[in-house]
Length: 250
Image (cartoon, helix red, strand yellow):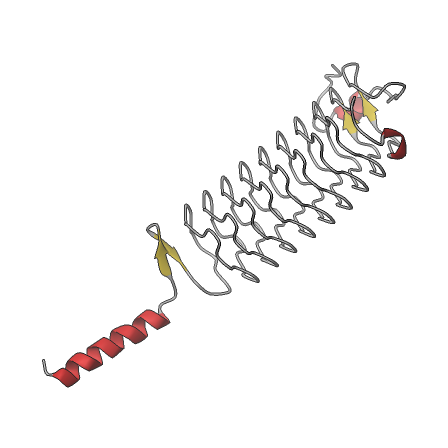
C-alpha cells in the first residue's frame, strides 16, 4: 500500500473515532452525549460533568459518580442502586420514580431535586443537602439522613420507617401523612416542620429541638413512642396504621 493510501486509512480511522457514539468505561459502553439511555452499570464516572444530560430509564447501578456534576439531569426512573454519588452536585435534577436503594449520597447536593416516588431504601445520605426538594411519596425506609439538611423540602406521604434523622435540619420541612415507624430523630431540629397526619409508632423524638413549634395536627404515636418531656401524641388507631403498619401499636 503506498503512502497516500496509508494516510487515507489513518484519516478514516480518526474520523471514525470522533464520530463514535461512545467510549468504554470498565468494559461498558458510555455515550458521551447529552442524552443517553442504556446500560452503564459499574461505570467509572467520578468527577465527570454530566450537566443537563437525559438519563431517563438508564441503568447506572453500582456506578462511580462521586464528585460528578449532574445539575439539572433528567433521570426519570433511572437506576442508581448501590451507586456512589458522594459529593456529587445534583441540584435541580429530576429523579421521579428513580431506583436509588443502597446508594451513597454523603455530602451530595440535592437542593430543589424533584424525586417524587423515588426508592431510597437504605440510602446513606450523611450530610446531604436537600433544601426545597420535592420528594412526595418517596421511600426512605432504613435510610440514614444523619446531619442532612432538608429545610423547606416537601416529603409528604414519605415512608421513613426505621430511618435515622439524627441532628438533621428539618426546619420548615413538610412531612404530612408520612410514616415514621421506629424512626430516630436524635438532636434533630424540627422547628416549623409540618407533620400533619404523620405516624410515629415506636419513633424516638425525645431529644428533638423545636417540638412545640412544629405542627403535629392529626399525628399519632404508640406506647413505645418517645417524646420530649411534657409533649403528647394520641395513640394511632388501627385505621391510621393499616396502610403500612398493620395493627401493631407497640
